[in-house]
Image (tube, rainbow, N blue to C red):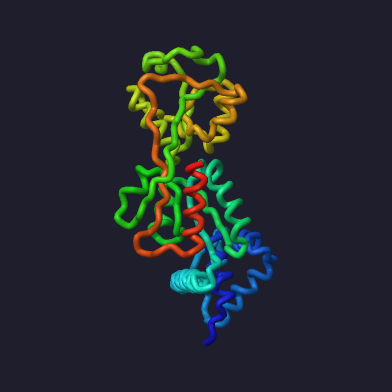
Length: 298
């Protein structure tokens, strides 16, 4: 029995993307071509890897076993590319970084853009999810680098963390919603309608911490999905919100949002670069970390 590594890689992408169509879009292949690769892989192994009877992709027992080995092959391929890169001096291979939506949008996308210019031979992927999911992917080895709030990444014995920058959280409102220039107390804030992010987001945890700091009751609402939607809700005058400074800096400069001055004020939160203690960084990962530090310092 001869195992085709390319078909094995396509099978891994189908599982990772959650279906044939999504994998085809990612791989710039047609869906029939992706399906054919998996069919031929099943034929070569004389087994069924994917249960196609339901609307969602489900692996058979054999498929789950093969996926474990496929992931090991991918990891070995990355290590091989990294070893060759160390010899040649030019980073190559694959770079996978995980982070939250906030840090991906306002911090990492510019870094990825610059990295792609400097190292076009590296395949880059940015995975975005809530903090809990990215932390799990880092622990399981699905991502090798993660940019996360320091209070969530620093507690695991499996992670090595490096502080990158401090993120200040601000209380923002529609201009005229709160008294301009005057310090607002918890009593003042108790009269306001607070808007929140969805449960599980790093911003939501900062918002919950702020409510506890001011002695206000925690929110019972499900929250708004995404910082952009939350920001637009504040601009529309629907309420006030605690938000990361990077998310609202432009709107504050343009006058679409106003900055409130709560007492007590909000502490900064440290953002860290988290990596696994069990593996060393490849040359590409080292270069990305170096570039991230440069951007953070700036």
